[in-house]
Length: 83
Image (cartoon, rainbow, N blue to C red; front, side):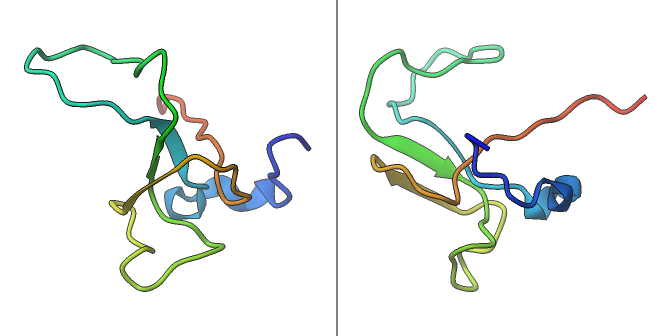
C-alpha cells in the first residue's frame, strides 16, 4: 500500500484519519475560494491529530505542526457529501 494505510477500515471516523499536509506559505490579504496552496516550498503544514504520536495537546483535531521529512502518520483524507 503506497499510502501506508494498513488499517483503512479504521478511517470511518474523522478523529481516526491520518494527519494531512500542505505547503506552508504566508497569508495574503485577498480571500480565495478553494485555495490549492503554493506551487513551491519545502516545509509542509501538518494538520490534525495522529493515532501514532501525540501528547494530550497534539491529539486535538485542531493541532498544527510542520515538517519536511516523510512520516508514517501522514496521509490524505477522502470525503464526499452526504446524500
